[in-house]
Image (cartoon, rainbow, N blue to C red; front, top):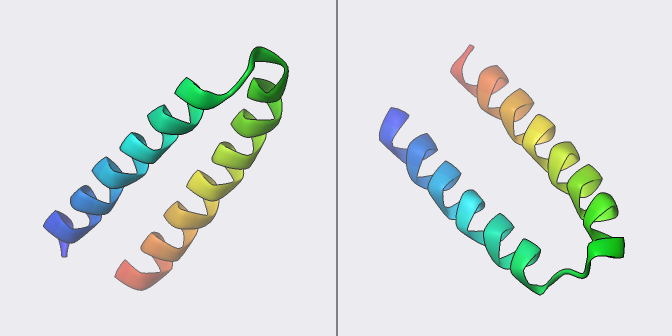
Amino acid sequence: MQIKLHAKGELFKQQLSVLFLFSRSEQRMRLCKIALFFIITCWQSAISYVL
């Protein structure tokens, strides 16, 4: 379970870095908000799954 979550986290980080590479600076703020939203939802679902 822990390993699966870690692998998902690594994949997520890779996708985020790719997004940031291709983003322009004026889009970066919006991307940050979207990324933050996804991170929060992922953590909430992960926590509810564990509990």
